[in-house]
Amino acid sequence: MKEKCSDMDIYIYYVSLRETRFEKHVTAMKKLTKIFGKRMWENSLFVLTHANLAEDMDAEILEAEDGQKPELFKAMIQAWKESVVSTLITHVGVDEAIANRIEIVPAGYSIDPALLDRDHWLSPVWFAALYTMNPRAQPAMMKLNFGRIVEKPEEIRDEDLQKFIHEQPLIFSQRGAAVGEKYGESEVGKAVGCRMGKGASVEIKLVLELHAVAVEIAKRLQKAFMEYIEGTNEAKKGE
Image (tube, rainbow, N blue to C red; front, side, top):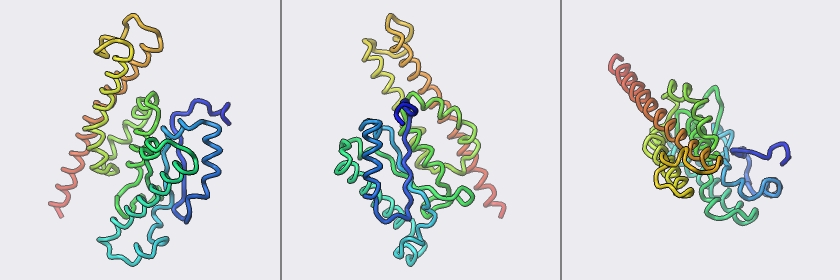
């Protein structure tokens, strides 16, 4: 397996919310860790499937008032996260800092994408994958999904939008500055094309591209989102 999948940018581990215990996955996770090494968990994402059936699986959620269900659903996801993190640290030997950074997101049906606490589950999964994957793959990920993300603002949660617009370009800039310092230059732009090895030049160009793509998507995403909100408000006025 390692020979065929030796250069992975992200590992996505699917777990069904129908399962009652996460501990049963310990053997599988240990085998994966033995094959790919503990560093695989730095770029790992856990997706909890069948989240649209949460009410059928939890009597408390089923019997609760509609206004209480979103918070109870969030509590269910948080309980799963605590179980995943605890299992990785205790039984798989993953570093605590790495385990606590792992994103855990719910997913449901594609034809009916609403969950108890959100209108569409795909957007949070997409953003979680973007933040989790190896930085070298992020520009391609954003470019491939540029049109879909910008053209469908109704799928985007405001919290994901704000995180991307305000945090992600800054994170890419900070990473770029760190790369520049690593190779003895205070400014990333100045470092590109200077007297350094091919690997260093490629890494710095990647950071610059990553930042540029992030800024452009953030601008268009914000514009599309605002147009969507304005259109929704106008439709409500006309009703």
